[in-house]
Image (cartoon, rainbow, N blue to C red):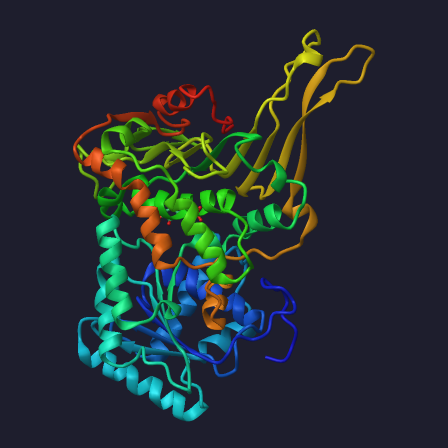
Length: 515
Ligand code: BG6
């Protein structure tokens, strides 16, 4: 495409990624439709893909190239008609979309069948012959039970062998295992067929601009870091409150629950960004090493102790944003007596020099009254001696990182109310992304896919990052598996179970209200 794009998601100076074939396993699945194709379209529109770029969709569904291209066009149009989801485009621009779909091929086949992978190899070899580039990315947009199967088949077919003609990379979606043992087993399985440099484990929270911004805020400013420790910080709260329920994912959610779904991955990404030591450089491994170190420093508790620091809840019927919501136990594919948690709140302690004694509280839940993902860093209260006799409390300073919505950062501090008497009030200094930077809506996957194509692993989880996350939550999972720690109930549309507030009260802390 020679014309300038009508809008851009990536920065203007972004160069086209090297020519490559992206093979999507799960070509007819939800992830491909809702996120991967919209992201690839945005990349095409940004001219961030090479002319020799190609997509091969692989799925069991019988289809051919033209049929699959039409399926994709229809899916994109219906996604836009539904409001776009995270995609947020209001129309499909013909030029970039045609550019992209012309480069789409389809292969129908069973993931367990050697023939599928031999056919795939023939297609990629032919392409290498034709273009001189054998670069290929294998994207596992499939149910987790297929991760190992597809990886093994790719290995056996020689599709992961890198040559002078090109790289071979494998992208694995979440959930990466269901506990420490299964995550280790999956890592071992992947590492048998590919090197760590070839494996890109996705955590889509890392594709969010505001998550990446935490690192810039901490390490590109001289102002904050000197206060960033137990000497000045009282506690940290990390919240991911969702208004959506389990939707049509009952089957998946029943065996997963809020903790496995959100904590060892997304919530720990936020915790790691806030708590990690400054890396030696912005190099992928330097950053991932620091992130792994801080998660590894989470205090190891016995299951009995761990469940005392955790609260699990499940939503009952209620109203969310004015709409009636069923109780979790009445959602489709959910057991009427299910004990799966849809909410979890936890306290973690990080046993390192910087954070000793500073509680990190984490909460996440479905069908809550408000949608909000944020990190609150609460500083220690200033000595109030000077203002003992004035009206108004001297509240502790607070820095709030708003991940979504209303992306930005605010800092709370005390100010004098104008007037002859000294009266104190809290004020907020507020930075909003939208006020400063004009950026086009994106799915968050654009950056991640572009990074896979260019080989930048910074925003992907290394094997040790994944295992450290599971290790930190394993005692809670073990305790709950033994039926320790009650399941509390909360009304859909509320702020979660009461036990969550009590958890903080024990440390004399209080969640920042969600309203
Ligand atoms: C996914 C979880 O990984 O993250 C979902 O499986 C959750 O249950 C989602 O809703 C939250 O992501 P986001 O980007 O909507 O905050």
